[in-house]
Image (tube, rainbow, N blue to C red; front, side, top):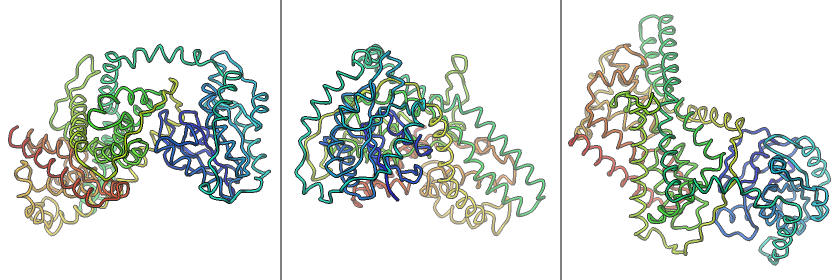
Length: 610
């Protein structure tokens, strides 16, 4: 299949254009380094590939190295029919630096190139017009004005792109980039400045409103207060906004369980449905709304352009712990999932800081821990509200758990930064970060992202939790049947491992759930739901928190479990990703053991002291 490649600088609307052309619900974010991997989709009869964003073909940072390397490979490919170079119409000079360098490379390898002048609606908002035809003549390539956000000019753009792609490419130069002498891009840098001054919006006009907001957001005092407030509201909202949805899901599961079991009547099938399906899998599904709320808030911060400011605010304090301002973005995205966050650390300039970031990302509380936190916080912390219900004591506890993970990550980073992690002692690269324009989120992709995060969470964890729930139910049900958990096969296994968890103030049921959760942290909730379902003999099917409270879990033991899950590295997929990214089995094994030992020690201290 013939290919069309899409290139451009970060924060220029490139990924949103890719979504509009392919119809894919691809993640769109307004901070540098988000597209560190190739994204592909079908555009008519062509394969459209979205390449990583880059500011220059003369790479300075690691993410630009990746982009330039992949672009050079595509230029050598005879199946590449057309190059779409996306330009930010509001920041024409910085876009043209890369765009004109890309044009030189396209000519060198005999490829067709078209410029997509994106965000043209923003230019009109500033009261400016760009003479697209004249700009195209001076560039010697077609320039098409569009807005990927409002769809202005998209229909005409699609038609023109398909026509240009049909024309095919010229004589392809098959020499490897290393064989050809490196081009001198100094002329393109100079010319981009001239063209931007002639056709583009004056930077003072574009930056007027942005600078007014940044004078507050980036101030040493007010910026720090705003950052802490935003982070507090982020985690407070998980309880405040999600609680009604969670109550609704729990009620729906309870009603469905009652309806289904009434149809089946008493017996083994009813016990299986109650305990394994509605007790195990159902207890896990209750927490899906919290995943959606977390995705919504982080998505709004990404799309608005605030995350780049947060990275800038965090650079100086993070530097003290041996990290970079760019480490903030993997750290925050790790609250959704550690795996893409570890991969996002590739964009950090310094190899040493990149490695430290990857090794400490698992200490950020990911969405897999969210059901565990929500369950135990509901059990241990009263539902007390302040300021008319805007502040919830359970939400404050939630924030403290996430904050504890961050502090632990920083302390571990400080220790690692003082040690010799690898043989690569390459000097640190400069911290370079473009501050994107403040923008309102594009709601359609954001809504798709919210539902997609919930779907992926259920698809990823659901089969594992279902399998574990069935296994636990079979082992816990036989040979004694319902209500005979102590004498079951699972009871025998649990009592054998119980001495390991006795210092933590936990009995064998919690020990079984913790060991099972090494497959995936969410399994803890499903496993406990199944165990309490079997033991409770069908009572309170979906109310796992009430069952745990009635069982008498102590405050110290419960807090110990929470701190254990904050610190312990017990996600198989995360361990595999760390192994792939670091290339060191020894390093990752030591990390798993070290975090596990620290988590166990914290849990034991909580149980004994509280």
